Length: 120
DNA sequence: TTGTTGACCCAAG
DNA sequence: TCTTGGGCCAACA
Image: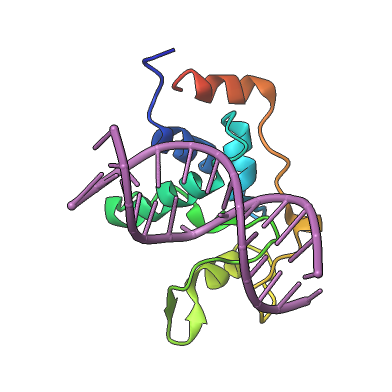
């Protein structure tokens, strides 16, 4: 389809469905969109979120494939993303790592995914 | 259209 | 476990 929704919007649609207390990776999101090698583009999309001020997108629930936080932003000495995740019940170690084995979000079911790919 | 930049991923060493 | 290098993709100048 040539009139499919923007790549950004698809990324946001998926991130919005990550349940509290779970995390997923940039690469997994890219794979859900049918672009297993577009992990960097997903990061680019989330980066643009800052300026858009879309507070309904839980960007903090996205970490890299190794369960590590890739964001350098920090306030009063503590990493912002780590703070938010811990407040949601996801433990983050001192070296900014999350136990992916325990907190990984498995992803969407086929019906939800199809809904997003269609533009829902 | 080309080159550069990123909140990445993966395989090797 | 950490570091490198190569690869991939979208946005932007």
